[in-house]
Image 1 (cartoon, helix red, strand yellow):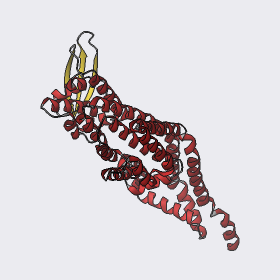
Image 2 (cartoon, rainbow, N blue to C red):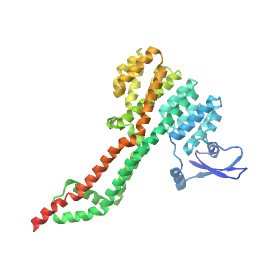
Image 3 (cartoon, rainbow, N blue to C red):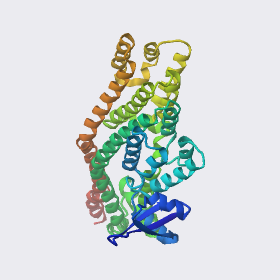
Image 4 (cartoon, one colour):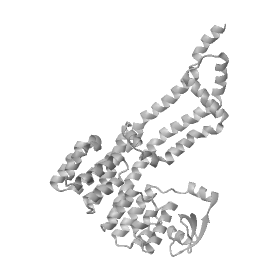
Length: 408
């Protein structure tokens, strides 16, 4: 349920509005972060108005997550109470979902719930990997440190995501324009072309037959023209589920340029999580278990699960890495060497953090040059689309002369 809170400063008379996703007016006031010198009025938004507000208002994203955890960590480090710390974050986050979450968590803590228990109601905001980190930090008395680490991780993720989105805008525009051109031609040029070719009763190339069949489909069922765009919307809206499929994750690793980014991203997440947990004095077997849950790519999830099994039977971390090095790809020998150095010098936590830093730095550099790496792929896609259209339209014309001469 969406609540609109109108906030008016009693001194200046200026008003502003805040959207909070919650079920009661009292929680809406908490989520809006109302100050003592402000008066308020709360309105429940329903129906079409609610859908419009959800479409146009800020969505929950990594920027909100980074701001929330960064502010929370700063407050907890200064021994501010958890309830007050959460309340101070209401004006740092922008989305109605995060404002509502803060209000709900504050209300749950007021009834005696732990922070980790309260946030389990929001799996979209706190996925299993993040929840595991928070539980571990809470149990170790290191919640402030864990929140700070999560904030740093979210900021870096936000930076990389923005670079990736920026690099993908050009190929996305090219693909969408290509689909629009094909659909437009299916309604205009292709029907006239089909009549001409049918009149001469000549054998048509396969590409032309496909284009004519597509045109017939759109002419008889115009609503099918929306199918490509619906497919793209479904693909991107369900990206999290699609990217979690093992076959898709294997495919990502095999793609040029993209595979390197995927591997380094998954490795950076895993080693950063493990470094954070060992620094918080979490037992190594438990830290590896939590890291496995935090890993989004199944290669690294499997790696950390197997490392935990080796540790459980008494092997050292270096021995475990040597036995499971095949999961690490081209970086295996280098990483095993670093882990051996850490075991000899007793600097395991520092070395894990250094490995994570190196991966994140490489990932930043790759993301910065992503547009240059994707440009050849974009040109190839554009070339295939243009080549198909030229072949489908002009291919039959080269044989029309033979047909006409035969008739004469």
